[in-house]
Length: 141
Image 1 (cartoon, rainbow, N blue to C red):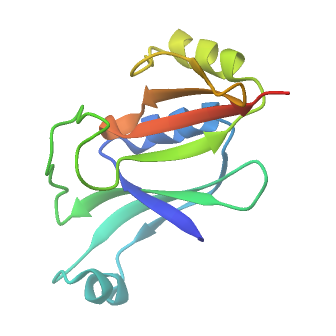
Image 2 (cartoon, rainbow, N blue to C red):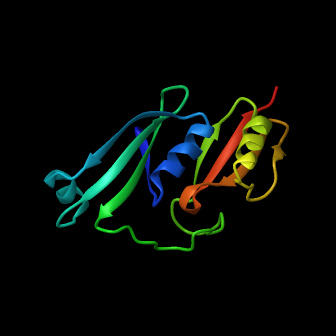
Image 3 (cartoon, rainbow, N blue to C red):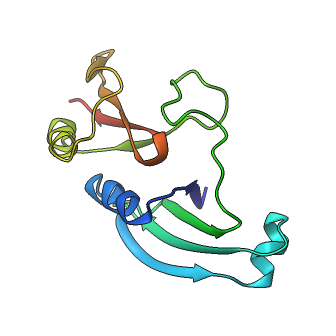
């Protein structure tokens, strides 16, 4: 997989959130070319895009903020983990307690609890920008 695309209203806040998770901003661009409209089935498109790279360099998160057409919300902001559709993205982290503490210092809360999973992982969900659930996992041992 090359990347996961996430449409957000507040692009700087989303960049900041994913940077705190350890992703690196590769670049930002405004897209308003005809090819983008044709691909997405719109008459015209104008959006700002930020590409974030995972620390291992193997994955990316593409953050998109639409000016034209205006982005629409199709579900509640804080949809639960069992809502239909793409529900979460998972990142492996080295020190999950440190990452969670840093996120909490910025006002991000856990969806549930930081929990050990079968003595193999520490695992939790946090709620990211636009209500997306981000899973964090630290391999134990």
